[in-house]
Image 1 (cartoon, helix red, strand yellow):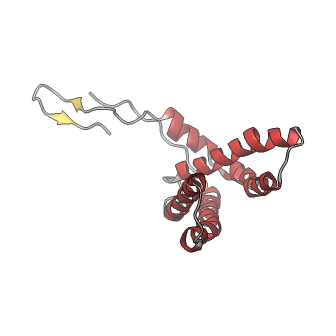
Image 2 (image 1 turned 180 degrees about the vertical axis):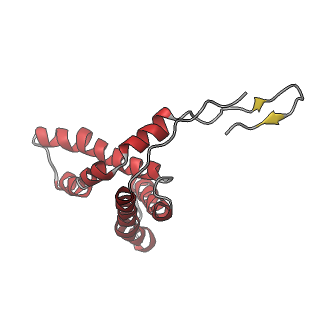
Image 3 (image 1 turned 60 degrees about the vertical axis):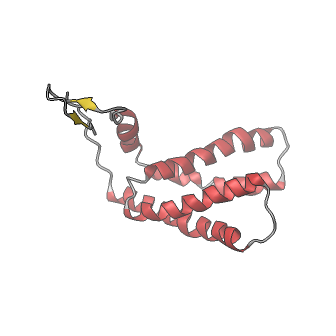
Length: 155
């Protein structure tokens, strides 16, 4: 049984690919520098939520180095970055601002997150839609082929 035909992915212009690379570089270099500096050199005990957050951000920064070489294959990282910052702005910062409850910490968080608007402008949304929504998912189990009893992994 043949897997369903995958629609052809739309081309992505080189300027978008280069802009994605700049985004990965900024995450890996700028954010990575600050987060890894904290992870490696801060000696005070951290509360568990901070350990989790800094560990995830440090890992994200390392994985973004792969985005320099494989900008389209690593798009899920850029989508993660886009999504968490969008959620922070829309569901945490905006309600606090509207209720006149902005704190200095939320103002700092907003200034760190607002740059995500640039990613919305350069993200290859047609490619994202074709690759992650329209393209069939990978098989959940092996598919039997013919009557010989052999099994074939479908990709």
